Length: 319
Ligand code: SIN
Picture (tube, rainbow, N blue to C red):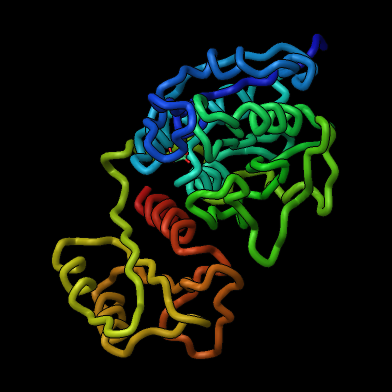
């Protein structure tokens, strides 16, 4: 077979951001530079790809505004490219703010047992004095082209993360991601991948059904996230139930505990058929279930990722 290609799909983010002043790292506008232009600014990218590089602009947004329609379009393009025998892997340029959510959505709906989808990003705009995007893009392409790479991955600041554990943990510093207790899967050093763990297990079939079978965005169930905190009440939950919410994820204190007033409202919601899942608001670790728990836990998923899994599960049950 001829050389396999790497496909880079652009979705926007700070990696494609520009500011009027080169030194301005916060007063910029995300999602301004096209993906072709991003690739052209990185020397050595072709060599890192070890074959042809193809670019396509799927969206051009600040990832705080990520929505179901863009997720569907992105996942469909990923699936179409991954199915082509001459494609080795896909790289997605993305904003940092919801990167972990897109990574988990793609993990849930794509077949990546044999080929990787690598998300990358930047904390500094393309016009910064020292932009981090070009190196991240180079590293992501090297990972996508690496022998044996598979699964949905994220690459930033020289580290490789799996979709399950990656999370943004800092709003400003360049090294803004970690993987909590799990740690990074490995590192990219001068274009070489050094793994600390194996590539993430990627099932032959996506956990939540293939992207081809996911309903249009307008038909997606509504799943909201609420937080337990000092002084919490059940008012929000009661209002959401009245408003027809389908599912609720609650970011609990500690090991899945809840303010008693919020807990009472969540139990009322569950009694009315709303699916309720407990996650933890702690940055690391997971809720350890106990016998007799009245509300199920998220099996280690953070609140934002538990929301995606619950949403897809509800969608699958409706089909
Ligand atoms: C975004 O998430 O699109 C903007 C912020 C960033 O990429 O760092």
